[in-house]
Length: 136
Image 1: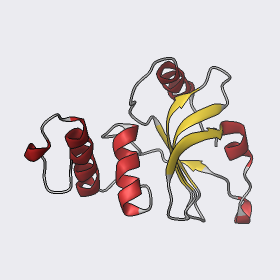
Image 2: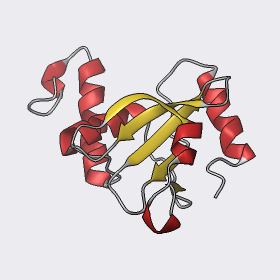
Image 3: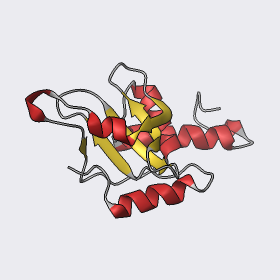
């Protein structure tokens, strides 16, 4: 499988040209393991992706990864890393990262993402008393 369509590549490159907390564009996963990646940006070199990387050890983090290296991974049974064809981001990469830190893994659970978004919003608000307990 080609991990990136031309449309996805164009969106990732466009995000990579601008500053900001972008929405993830693509999700990759290991079909026989715990590794998952959410990427929001692609460097002009066409290889270095930026996003949320979770290798399944309980410590997901924002960082960069090589598209060519991910595509070159060969797994048991002739499998390789796959793209989640049904993935559609509902929040920014920062919200996914906050939720992943709280859960110890990348999550798409709406409650986890809502809590993470609220926590980040409270951290940016000048009046923490309006935030729920522990949010600021």
